[in-house]
Image 1 (tube, rainbow, N blue to C red):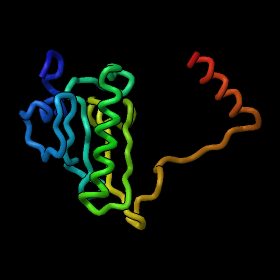
Image 2 (cartoon, rainbow, N blue to C red):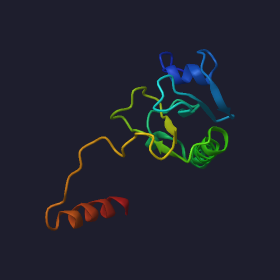
Image 3 (tube, rainbow, N blue to C red):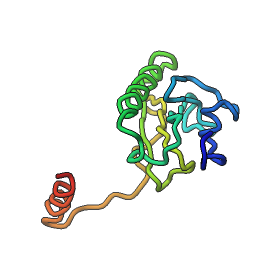
Image 4 (cartoon, rainbow, N blue to C red):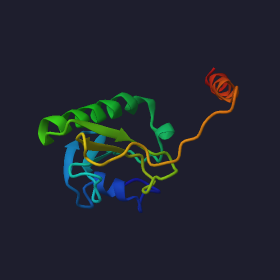
Length: 140
């Protein structure tokens, strides 16, 4: 573990200092079973480098991070007989460990998971266009 990461559970798992059921290990990333899975086979993918959120992930690791997610999503079907997967990550809010991690969860139709668990809202007349304009302007 590097400076400032002494208390990071996921850094300790990536370094092999804390036991976890690893399913993927590469020079840049580690994938291991979630100790409290949504469904059995639920994997957490983390960069070995301590970064807290997706915006913190260095550009040189982006493609590898997505490629590892893709590999894990594929093996959910091949190895577990799942019909698909749910792939998600949180940034700060609802992030139980402050280290970037992606959830790859095996899914099967009728498994009981019902979409997103937060309330939905609606845009007022013209409000969607205003939000889109703000986002487009910030992306320029």
